[in-house]
Image (cartoon, rainbow, N blue to C red; front, side, top):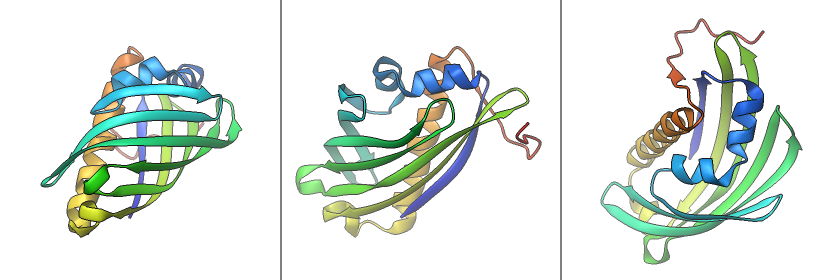
Amino acid sequence: MELNGEQLIAASIPDVWKGLNDIDVLAKSIPGCEEINRVSPEEIHAKVMFKIGPVRARFAGKLLLSDVIPDQSCSMAFEGSGGAAGFAKGKSRVELKPVEGGTLVCYTTEASIGGKLGQIGGRLISASAKKIADDFFQRFATELGGEVVPLDGAATPE
């Protein structure tokens, strides 16, 4: 499964970067987040409750950061297990770009899913993942004191 997108956050790049690296902000922004802990500067562990289609499961997983360029970009490798519900693992890249009105957050994600989740149709999983991402960015922008600005094609990097 691939999930790519862009979100315009009405906040400065330093504020967005700081928020993306603050586990308290992330805990309030990640839908279904029950627990999140920074193990090291490059490793984060989390427990999250997800409902994707008919499957509801608590996932325990870890996120490893790499290729970190502060205020610009980073790569992440992730893996999580939801017991009988299945597993997910993959990689993601996030880039921050200055635009009029705030920061353009561009992300690409590649994930593989197995177990019961792997038996759910790809469209349902993609739609659920997109909704989770959209919910995350709405909550994240609120935590930063701003909002997600609708992209109308007018946002171009400065």
